[in-house]
Image (cartoon, rainbow, N blue to C red):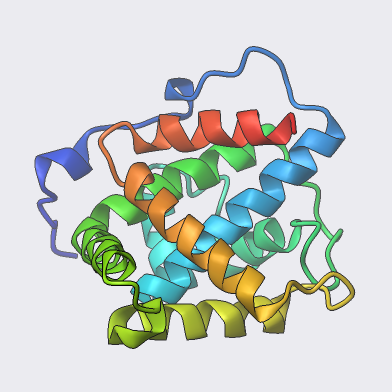
Length: 197
Protein backbone atom coordinates (compact mmCIF):
# COMPACT_ATOMS: atom_id res chain seq x y z
CA UNK A 1 0.00 0.00 0.00
CA UNK A 2 1.45 3.39 -0.98
CA UNK A 3 2.38 5.74 1.81
CA UNK A 4 0.68 9.08 1.39
CA UNK A 5 2.74 12.02 2.60
CA UNK A 6 0.29 14.28 4.34
CA UNK A 7 0.91 18.02 4.62
CA UNK A 8 2.61 18.91 7.89
CA UNK A 9 -0.55 20.33 9.44
CA UNK A 10 -2.27 16.96 8.85
CA UNK A 11 0.50 14.69 10.02
CA UNK A 12 0.84 16.34 13.43
CA UNK A 13 0.09 13.54 15.86
CA UNK A 14 -3.08 14.16 17.80
CA UNK A 15 -4.13 11.91 20.60
CA UNK A 16 -6.88 11.53 23.14
CA UNK A 17 -4.52 13.04 25.73
CA UNK A 18 -4.73 16.36 23.85
CA UNK A 19 -8.39 16.61 24.83
CA UNK A 20 -8.70 17.65 28.47
CA UNK A 21 -11.27 16.09 30.75
CA UNK A 22 -11.51 17.56 34.22
CA UNK A 23 -14.44 15.37 35.14
CA UNK A 24 -16.57 12.88 33.27
CA UNK A 25 -19.80 14.24 31.79
CA UNK A 26 -22.97 12.91 33.40
CA UNK A 27 -25.37 10.80 31.23
CA UNK A 28 -27.46 13.84 30.18
CA UNK A 29 -24.34 15.79 29.18
CA UNK A 30 -23.04 12.75 27.31
CA UNK A 31 -26.35 12.60 25.40
CA UNK A 32 -25.89 16.25 24.40
CA UNK A 33 -22.31 15.55 23.29
CA UNK A 34 -23.48 12.54 21.22
CA UNK A 35 -26.17 14.63 19.51
CA UNK A 36 -23.79 17.53 18.74
CA UNK A 37 -21.06 15.23 17.40
CA UNK A 38 -23.47 13.43 15.11
CA UNK A 39 -24.73 16.78 13.75
CA UNK A 40 -21.18 17.95 13.05
CA UNK A 41 -20.49 14.72 11.15
CA UNK A 42 -23.79 15.13 9.30
CA UNK A 43 -22.74 18.63 8.16
CA UNK A 44 -19.36 17.31 7.03
CA UNK A 45 -21.05 14.48 5.11
CA UNK A 46 -23.42 16.91 3.41
CA UNK A 47 -20.72 19.42 2.44
CA UNK A 48 -17.78 17.21 1.46
CA UNK A 49 -19.68 14.08 0.42
CA UNK A 50 -17.82 12.09 3.07
CA UNK A 51 -18.97 8.57 3.82
CA UNK A 52 -18.13 5.96 6.42
CA UNK A 53 -15.09 4.82 4.39
CA UNK A 54 -13.34 8.19 4.82
CA UNK A 55 -14.25 8.28 8.51
CA UNK A 56 -12.77 4.81 9.04
CA UNK A 57 -9.66 5.81 7.09
CA UNK A 58 -9.23 8.85 9.37
CA UNK A 59 -9.65 6.60 12.42
CA UNK A 60 -6.94 4.31 11.07
CA UNK A 61 -4.56 7.22 10.41
CA UNK A 62 -5.13 8.45 13.97
CA UNK A 63 -4.49 4.96 15.44
CA UNK A 64 -8.11 4.81 16.64
CA UNK A 65 -9.02 1.60 14.84
CA UNK A 66 -9.59 -0.11 18.20
CA UNK A 67 -12.31 2.41 19.05
CA UNK A 68 -13.80 2.67 15.55
CA UNK A 69 -12.99 -0.72 14.05
CA UNK A 70 -15.44 -0.99 11.15
CA UNK A 71 -18.64 0.35 9.55
CA UNK A 72 -20.82 -1.38 12.14
CA UNK A 73 -18.87 0.13 15.04
CA UNK A 74 -19.06 3.58 13.42
CA UNK A 75 -22.80 3.17 12.73
CA UNK A 76 -23.38 2.22 16.38
CA UNK A 77 -21.48 5.27 17.60
CA UNK A 78 -23.47 7.57 15.31
CA UNK A 79 -26.71 5.78 16.18
CA UNK A 80 -26.17 6.55 19.88
CA UNK A 81 -27.30 10.16 19.28
CA UNK A 82 -30.60 10.80 21.10
CA UNK A 83 -31.87 12.60 17.98
CA UNK A 84 -31.59 9.50 15.80
CA UNK A 85 -34.39 7.16 14.74
CA UNK A 86 -34.12 3.90 16.64
CA UNK A 87 -31.33 5.26 18.82
CA UNK A 88 -30.22 3.76 22.10
CA UNK A 89 -28.58 0.61 20.75
CA UNK A 90 -25.19 1.74 22.01
CA UNK A 91 -24.07 3.97 24.82
CA UNK A 92 -21.25 6.25 23.77
CA UNK A 93 -18.50 6.52 26.36
CA UNK A 94 -16.14 9.47 26.80
CA UNK A 95 -13.21 7.80 25.01
CA UNK A 96 -15.41 7.07 21.99
CA UNK A 97 -16.63 10.68 21.98
CA UNK A 98 -13.05 11.95 22.08
CA UNK A 99 -12.10 9.57 19.24
CA UNK A 100 -14.93 10.99 17.10
CA UNK A 101 -13.70 14.52 17.89
CA UNK A 102 -10.23 13.64 16.54
CA UNK A 103 -11.79 12.09 13.43
CA UNK A 104 -13.88 15.25 12.82
CA UNK A 105 -10.80 17.46 13.23
CA UNK A 106 -8.81 15.30 10.79
CA UNK A 107 -11.57 15.36 8.15
CA UNK A 108 -12.28 19.09 8.48
CA UNK A 109 -8.55 19.78 8.06
CA UNK A 110 -8.45 17.63 4.92
CA UNK A 111 -11.43 19.54 3.50
CA UNK A 112 -10.47 22.97 4.81
CA UNK A 113 -10.35 24.61 1.35
CA UNK A 114 -13.89 23.49 0.56
CA UNK A 115 -15.18 24.60 3.98
CA UNK A 116 -13.45 27.98 3.63
CA UNK A 117 -14.90 28.44 0.13
CA UNK A 118 -18.42 27.68 1.40
CA UNK A 119 -18.12 30.07 4.37
CA UNK A 120 -16.72 32.84 2.13
CA UNK A 121 -19.66 32.36 -0.25
CA UNK A 122 -22.05 32.55 2.68
CA UNK A 123 -20.49 35.82 3.85
CA UNK A 124 -20.69 37.32 0.34
CA UNK A 125 -24.34 36.34 -0.14
CA UNK A 126 -25.25 37.64 3.32
CA UNK A 127 -23.61 40.99 2.55
CA UNK A 128 -25.55 41.15 -0.73
CA UNK A 129 -28.81 40.27 1.04
CA UNK A 130 -29.17 37.11 -1.07
CA UNK A 131 -30.34 33.66 0.05
CA UNK A 132 -27.64 30.99 0.53
CA UNK A 133 -29.50 28.64 -1.86
CA UNK A 134 -28.57 31.02 -4.71
CA UNK A 135 -25.01 29.65 -4.72
CA UNK A 136 -24.76 26.09 -6.08
CA UNK A 137 -22.26 24.92 -3.45
CA UNK A 138 -24.39 26.16 -0.55
CA UNK A 139 -27.66 25.11 -2.15
CA UNK A 140 -26.40 21.55 -2.62
CA UNK A 141 -25.05 21.48 0.95
CA UNK A 142 -28.32 22.72 2.45
CA UNK A 143 -30.41 20.27 0.39
CA UNK A 144 -28.21 17.30 1.35
CA UNK A 145 -28.11 18.33 5.02
CA UNK A 146 -31.91 18.66 5.14
CA UNK A 147 -32.39 15.30 3.38
CA UNK A 148 -29.92 13.52 5.68
CA UNK A 149 -31.54 15.05 8.76
CA UNK A 150 -35.07 14.15 7.70
CA UNK A 151 -34.06 10.58 6.75
CA UNK A 152 -32.14 9.81 9.94
CA UNK A 153 -33.63 11.78 12.81
CA UNK A 154 -36.74 11.22 14.91
CA UNK A 155 -39.84 12.68 13.31
CA UNK A 156 -41.61 13.73 16.49
CA UNK A 157 -39.22 16.67 17.04
CA UNK A 158 -38.45 17.52 13.42
CA UNK A 159 -37.35 21.17 13.00
CA UNK A 160 -38.98 23.36 10.35
CA UNK A 161 -37.24 23.89 7.02
CA UNK A 162 -36.01 27.35 8.17
CA UNK A 163 -34.67 25.90 11.43
CA UNK A 164 -32.79 23.20 9.53
CA UNK A 165 -31.25 25.80 7.21
CA UNK A 166 -30.19 27.87 10.23
CA UNK A 167 -28.69 24.78 11.91
CA UNK A 168 -26.85 23.74 8.73
CA UNK A 169 -25.32 27.21 8.27
CA UNK A 170 -24.29 27.42 11.92
CA UNK A 171 -22.61 24.01 11.65
CA UNK A 172 -20.86 25.09 8.45
CA UNK A 173 -19.24 28.02 10.28
CA UNK A 174 -18.33 25.70 13.17
CA UNK A 175 -16.58 23.35 10.70
CA UNK A 176 -14.25 26.18 9.73
CA UNK A 177 -13.17 26.57 13.37
CA UNK A 178 -12.64 22.82 13.73
CA UNK A 179 -10.40 22.77 10.63
CA UNK A 180 -7.87 25.04 12.38
CA UNK A 181 -4.64 23.51 13.79
CA UNK A 182 -6.18 23.30 17.30
CA UNK A 183 -9.58 22.24 15.91
CA UNK A 184 -9.91 19.02 17.92
CA UNK A 185 -9.42 20.88 21.18
CA UNK A 186 -11.85 23.64 20.10
CA UNK A 187 -14.52 21.10 19.23
CA UNK A 188 -14.02 19.13 22.44
CA UNK A 189 -14.24 22.23 24.65
CA UNK A 190 -17.30 23.44 22.69
CA UNK A 191 -18.98 20.06 23.22
CA UNK A 192 -18.27 20.11 26.96
CA UNK A 193 -19.49 23.70 27.16
CA UNK A 194 -22.73 23.04 25.24
CA UNK A 195 -23.35 19.89 27.27
CA UNK A 196 -23.79 22.05 30.37
CA UNK A 197 -26.63 24.05 28.77
